[in-house]
Length: 269
Image (cartoon, rainbow, N blue to C red; front, side, top):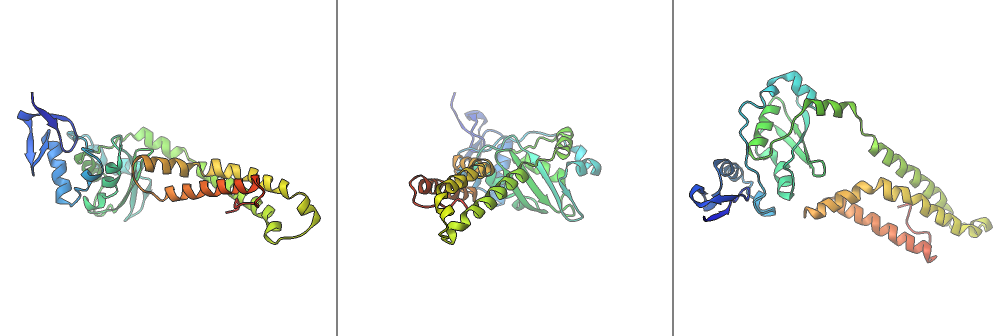
């Protein structure tokens, strides 16, 4: 039996069931429809990042009719004003750079969406839209139509609202504490004060500065390293890559300066 792969989702298709459109083969009308949507909106670059990155859209049959209820929608929203609504949706199918690209271009597919941002590690897309021009149900149906059906559970969303993640606040607090003390200990060498006790304990202060830099380098900066690594794996250039590279290079350079007594390094930077 002759088979080949679907241009959209990559699944094997039987030759007798093949659907041809614009010299491309599709396994079903769903995949062909997604391609048509992207083609009509000048979004076919979606297929340039990965080979057959899509998924076959599923039939919903009234599955999201509950989103017609304003009270339910209000519980799902992160932010709500007259002209601005923000919602974060969990999308299990997010897996590659093509997914990120198309989900961050939703404004080209639906009027009323002003911004969409993907959190690749959490498989979430954060969508900002104008409720006067579109609504959450329309957005969810659009995502399903292009093969990115979101998983929506009111229990999960209520749990998220009750739990406040303060890890970023702690990381900023640790970074500021370390930065302030490192700057304070670095002042004598900045001004080249020739006091006896400063010269006598110079090495001690330098190693103390090194010790203070460790929590900021490993704890406060860890998110940048993880994000940069995932961006590299996805072959997507993000701002976290040069930030992480700069932090690591300066830390290694400063450590070398202290170990070989070249100077105090650049831990304050």
